[in-house]
Length: 435
View 1 (cartoon, rainbow, N blue to C red):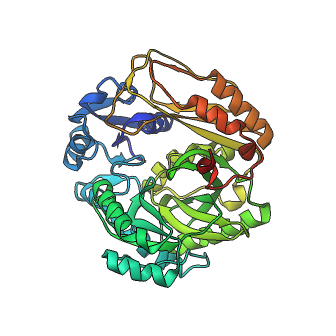
View 2 (cartoon, rainbow, N blue to C red):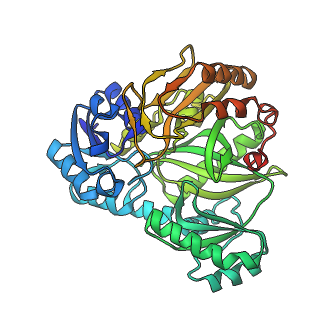
């Protein structure tokens, strides 16, 4: 096991990882930008290093400065969290070159699986059904021809995409060329890679994902499904597990297929397989995230398994000490993402409490919410024995959560969990388009 880990991230996920390390008896090293010098993750870590200006490109995306901090601190491993460098194969190789363990898949596997067009080819060789689509297309003209073969409507997606960026819904050919150039430009800006691919648009559908843990000894388990269908512009707002749209036998079947697929492609670490669930109950594989997901904690609440700790153990070569039969998925858990709608100084925060209520955040009184980073302030997660009880608990918790000094989406989240379409469990990806 590692004795010291550097966390190459900020915000609530850096705090989350530091807490896991402390519980494991592992020393922690924080890195921070000039804008984050008074941040909670800096105060909680055993050591901390400023690595640059507020802009992410000058700090949290500066690979050499992060490696230098790790070497200076004597860290044996780096946990990238999510976002920033978490799916950067070049950074994973740089860690290896400097004798540091990257907590995630090896760079070769990451590079292969992060290209969504290549990944779909690999998954098509397993028992999972893949959404009909193309390999990477390199021009608008090639995209037009491919779309004609597939048939409209289609989804145009960035091969290196994530977080809802570089995605366009195209309903007819007249919109494709302009959308192609816009999506390519967005993908280059976000990921440094403008390659795109096309897939058939499945409608209506729900977004359902499966959480996987796999070690280097050939063991793999699925920790169940998460329904992430409540989104705005491809950005998730609420997640829940288990999905109210998936029956027990159906869930067990797709989980078994997912475990087999992960073993076949040789994946090691924590990962998520994402699917579209159509109106007939068919799962269509979309993509795989080869990192920790923002919404991992809703699965932790349901199963009682600490995914972050197991990420660290797997990276240290420790085998999983449980199997699929040990996974208990009783009850219901829901997560609401709490986002900032403005910048400023946090004057006061009150966090709800009680059994099975969790708020993962980096906020403390005096925190400065700056314009440089993602708007996520925290994640409110609740668990109960039934979905009905979980919904009541989430409403009560949202009413109790107070964040003063900046504008947030707490009121909107309360309206969403009270919406009859959500409480009935009969929602899909069109939900926010109808509000």
